[in-house]
Length: 463
Ligand SMILES: [Ca+2]
Image 1: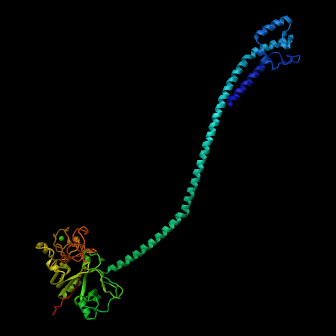
Image 2: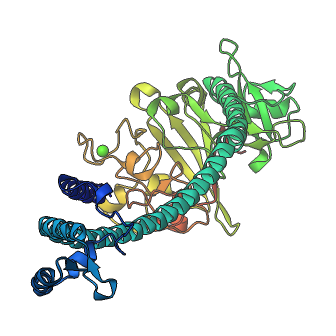
């Protein structure tokens, strides 16, 4: 457009120049005294007149004393007109180059205008294209904005409503868990307090008590249950479970396995006191059901057996309900100073004399090393067995599951691991050894008994 404006200015300038040239000659007022005017301002006529005709006009001028009009129909020009014609012809010669130049300029201008027009068309098309792209982008931006708004609304809802709700629910859950933990901690604290006192029971203590379970029977305590026992007036009384029915009763329960509820893989210090449960009250108002326990205290078993001849009754039951027993008229346990050495004698019963004879299936040294009579007591933290003494890695107690009078190692293992169902394999055993509640002379090494118990009472020779 700017270019076009410049070109227009040039054209106007050129015409202005032309006018100036015309003014340079005779003034217009005197050119046409008869009121004549050229049809088209005189330019075309003058420009169209051939030079040859002018020569002819000159000749005509000579003949008539004037000159012909350029058009014959218009007649002859007067001498003044001839002067005007000459002036016009003269001016034509001056104007022609300018007109030619103007024509070329107009051509160039036309060409430029065409180019600019084409350029403008291209620009228009491009603008239209950009508008379409812009509209498309606008649509995308709108869609994106909508999506963003939806997501924002969702997130806002989540932050404002869902999260607080979930946090509230979780806080509730947390509070409940905290309450449960507190209850459990309280229960644990209570249990720990109870466990401070070994062999404690919560059953009512019977009115009847005595020096021995045998003594209790004499005083009227004929039911098998927990009683207070006081061997001599100088020692404190303690609770025991008295079996008052088996073989005329009067037995003090010193060991019992029946359901695997108590772990017997314990340290020496646990065995030197006592552990487990003496008895339970299952709703009859007194402790008539014995628990799993082990009683090895110096001042109890050892002292008992030292007071006089003591007999031992070992009763056992397999998982089909069959029962056998082993009874020893003479049974003693030495004090802790000699590691509770076991001594048993005068066997009777149906379970075979395991303590004195060892395993029947073995012979020679192999059988000898399964005899328990005369053995010291061993736990996994105190090795007193006959298996490679001095080698701490060779311990019958740690391999066979409990504390016992191990030799090298056993023919019976009443304090072994509890296996439900009886039969087990070396793959089930912790160390691949026969660590169940074993009585080899009755059920072999790979059968764990359902129950076994050891009871003692003063021995009175039968008359
Ligand atoms: Ca050993």
